[in-house]
Length: 189
Image (cartoon, rainbow, N blue to C red; front, side, top):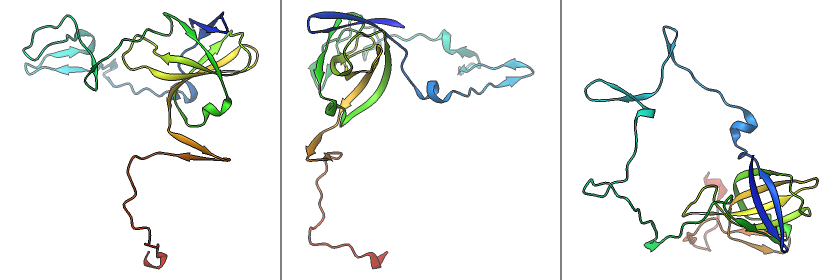
């Protein structure tokens, strides 16, 4: 558990952020072990000379096109210099209370349990989420349940429009090129 700090209505709330809930956590994991003569075999790389190199023996370096080591890496997103966002653990995360309807169209990619949070139950919009410093943060919502339990929902918003009691999803950017006068003839199937 790592400590994360939230700020809402000029008050600071400290909570414990648990490990990400994954399929392995929910359903378990099966691991395949390969043995030969009672010895567990490890993965590695075979060199042209016939030597085996373990994964732990390989290191990575950042190089320029000429092969020289690069000290400072400049990151751009769509040709624009990108800003490095701080980790969620390195800052006070300002919350904004939002309506529960904000969950509609929010594509959740990661879920983190939050314990010992004393906020009023409800849904809060949190700042961009980065577990570690990152150039590409994700959006996040904090869902607080009763008794100090909550969930940090990380993902992105889907383009949706509320039409009465229905939700219209904009899933594709492709225009329909079919002729509107064409009718489906199920006798052809």
